Image 1 (cartoon, one colour):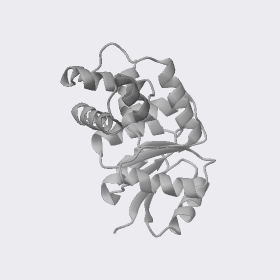
Image 2 (cartoon, one colour):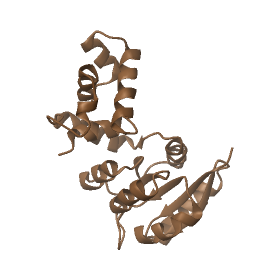
Image 3 (spheres, rainbow, N blue to C red):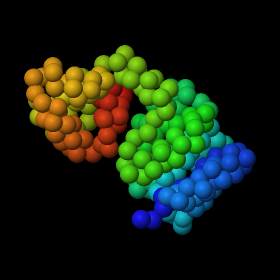
Length: 211
């Protein structure tokens, strides 16, 4: 199996060097390029064809959130993970709504970062514990809006399940409330994601609560 190809995007050269050395010892990961900002990343990404981009949130010329929005449209096969010291809502929710595969803080352990890269390359969403807790708290405070794009594609039961996901409910909780099995809940969630063109539960929740 080919190693996961990673692009490092950070305006601090010392940080890029540190990440390169950290990831270089991993057999399943290969750092294929670096960029000091979003614009530089877009200039090289077509040639180096990374699987994952580790992106800083704050950078000159083009920040991480804007870069991720561009990647989602222009290079959808690249899984972008924000790796930042900042956990403000502006960056966290901006990045996730823009299509980020994850949001990790720079105080994470090397093992956590390596795991995040590998999981993101497989299509999973990766969040640091602090960011995950903030996301759940925000979703519980912000009820799903009345209508959302693609709502007419969903059945009544799928819509019901989608709204519960947006409220932060787990499959077991949804199954208990609706008197159905967890397997049936999983099937409904998969159907909703497919119909709305979303990657996972995190994007679904944001899709239904985004103002």
